[in-house]
Image (cartoon, rainbow, N blue to C red; front, top):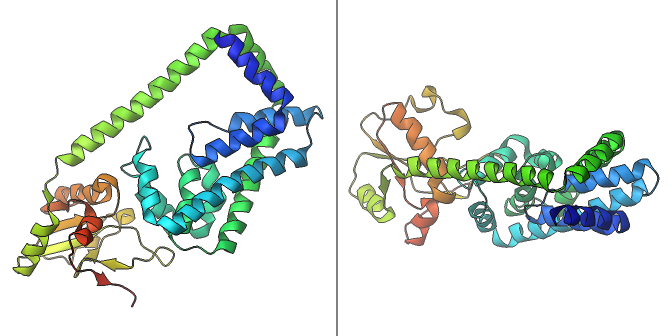
Amino acid sequence: MLRAAMQALIALFEQHSLAALFLGVLCEQLGAPLPSLPFLLLAGVQLSDGRLSPWQALAVATAAALLANTLWYLAGRRLGRRVLTTLCLISISPDSCVRQNELSFVRRGAFTLLVAKFVPGLTVLAPPLAGALGMSWRAFLGFSLAGTLLWAGTGLVAGVVFHEQIADLLAALDRLGQAALGVGLALLALYVLWRVWRRWAVKRRLQQLQRVDPDELAADLRAGRPLLVVDVRAQSPVLPLESRIPGAVHLDLARLEAEAIAGWSLEAEIVTYCACPNDASAAKAACWLIAQGRPARVLAGGIEAWASRGHALELLGA
């Protein structure tokens, strides 16, 4: 039965190559757990024997990717970082999802869109992040188009170059039938289980850190307790921070070095905060600070929880 299903999928691609390529790329770029590389490689195989036009294949793959990317870009413009948090919450590794992709924009700027499709996880998050950061429509479209052409062209060329090996692989899979699919599904299941276990282990370790409620932190600040509030959100000229908790200092997670905290008061208790799922960035910073011998807690819910309780924010760049 599984063998027949695989043969039916291959036959479907043979008969409706461009439609299958469009749907495969579109689904992946919208966030479905369906890799589009096999579709590009199969299209490349057809390019090698003249069954498919290279310009048609490139145009179809590019159009599908740009359609999905544009929808995510518009969602980022309208919903801001909320759409990023939602995407990360449904991913297998949400704890560092927003932080890693924000840091990518901090380091590479718009160049991130050129390489996004070659980086697992970044391909879906880059367009809404570009929208949330206020990247102009022209800049987004230009860099996204260039990155898509590079990615789709690479996949198609790989299919042309390795068309004989791909044909041999398909023939071998056809001979193995159910056994090949069984091995593939087993490997996929092991990978998912490993990622889920890793997520659980990291989450359990981070939950052991002491949290502080926003109302409690606000009361301690009003009472004049020796506290140092630390903002660990990513920032750069490309990714500026609009506001912060009054008096907070910034700590760059990309450069956790002893020199970064050399001037901090030794008497002050440290409270870290961020704006990501499970307070992941703040928890990472707190773990590092504790390892440096500095007492640190994490603001539960981050800056969003602070603002939702009605506590004041200090505007930056005004």
